[in-house]
Amino acid sequence: MTRAPDPARLLAIYDREVAQFAARTPKSAILSKRAHRVMPDGVPMAWMVGLHRHPALFVTGGQASAFNDVDGNTYVDFNLADLSNTVGYGANAVTRRMSAQAERGMQFLLPGEDAVAVAESLARRTNLPLWQFTISASSANTEVIRIARAFTDHQKIVMFDGKYHGHIDATMASGGAPGANAPAAPEGMGLSPSASADAINVPFNDLAALEAALESGDIALVIAEPALTNCTLVLPDPGFLDAVCQLARKYGALVCLDETHTWQLAFGGFVRAEALSPDFVTLGKGLGSGTPLGAYGMTATLGGFVERHRGLYDSPQRGLAIGGTTFGSALTMSAARAMLEDVATQGAYDRISALGARLADGIDRVIAAHDLPWCAFRYGPRSGFCLTPALPRNYDEAYPSMDLAFSDAFRVFMANRGIWAAIFSAGPQVSFAHLPADIDLYVELAGAFVTDALT
Ligand SMILES: Cc1ncc(COP(=O)(O)O)c(C=O)c1O
Image (cartoon, rainbow, N blue to C red; front, top):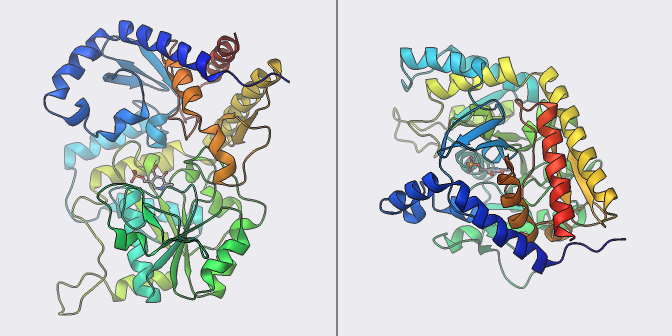
């Protein structure tokens, strides 16, 4: 069996390709210089820079599965703005509805028919009857956690190692499993240590560890991605998610399945595919077709609780701390309606799942051709290189596949040849706009990269 590429070789490829990238993107470099005068790191969100460790890229627009930079280079996109643009670029179905809405007004702080149609569609797909809308998945998770705390009168939340539920104090905490020496700790500067103290993280696919956490009886919410999608791809064992719901119920905790990424892997997400019965489901990302929109569905019981405890302007009682003026605007709702009714249909999921299998098969062929001790991730439209012989069952097993030397060299190699690869921990994924030729180009170039890396 061939040994995995040498890190020194990967670094040499990275250096060579970064120089080529810089030579191909002079207009981006000029814009970046200008941007640095008015934005930290020259970007609207400084954290973006850490995702792509190569010179800055500025875009002009895109069409279907590809976008263009200001230098006129084209990139077939397998990152999809970390799945917030699974619709593709300039999708007619979406732009038609959004333009029509924009001409009539984008935001009213009053609902329109689109909000009803979107909630109806989500209720049908997920079997959760009642829906609320926010500006992002992070804000949806924030509200879910608050409702769960108010409903159960408990404070603590349980999560799974390797999770990501948004940049919020409550969930950006690591550690704290039962029996650990220390409580969970904030995952970044500026986060509240007291918020972290209410967090407990246990390994994914480990029901005994989950039960140990729940046994304290003071858990408000178990929040889980049905499959971990932010540390490569970790699939649930058969029956694991159902057991999570049952165990939480046994100990009086609520369950939220955070399907922000996974609803884009299967029609109706895992909640439908596995007929699960969580108390909440959160969504976001591509639901808004690239506009900022989050959503959460809940059971009738929790919907009733929200109605009884809404923010009360008309009473001295304190209500639930939920809401925001730009949440669920008319514009984002028109985008979501187009996504649900015109783009993300059952037939469209079938098509992109077949393309996802084509991508995974291609990656497996590249691995086999070089006799490497790796395999392909695969679930519906999602794939990628798993840099271990067997697929991971938890974060610790997934960690070796998040190899920065590999992904830094891979990303910039692919970018120089017209593919925008996924950020290192999540993807590639097929969008609703990809065609078979896009997949074949990815596989061909991935093969060329591996050959180069083993030279
Ligand atoms: C599972 C999951 N939940 C929540 C979020 C937060 O999404 P946003 O940054 O759009 O609020 C993400 C983002 O990657 C995610 O992957």
